[in-house]
Length: 193
Image (cartoon, rainbow, N blue to C red; front, side, top):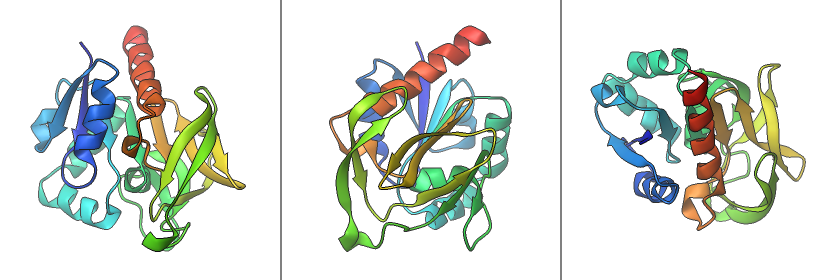
């Protein structure tokens, strides 16, 4: 059985867990660093990236998360989770900095500018349901990351090896294809190990 953690410090933890369970995996709400042991992948949910970083520091997650990423374990960040993963953030210091991309926070506007849109995502297909709430954009990707989705000329999803990030909230829809895609990344990673 595949064990996938959802970092349960803040954000849409339950919604990610439900989306992952639809892919028939074991889901663990990760509230302590030692729970990272034995996981095959980890999801950083949407929420508020600055708050999440404070809680990561407060509960001693920073070094264990860096180690988890350095071991090549698959990670998936949505919205604020993508911000946590980015090597560069416009106008501020990066957080975990594990993925070769630059992001800009709240790039699509404030809460009232939230919207939904169908997206084409490479490796998944058409009409992937994207929910954008105070969403960042991926300003650019480095040579080791590839753009897998754009909306209105802006990068909204990228992949770098075992790392996956998107600006939107796939967990807030009944379209679980992004989560299934992440589960397939984990399966391939386990076969390659």
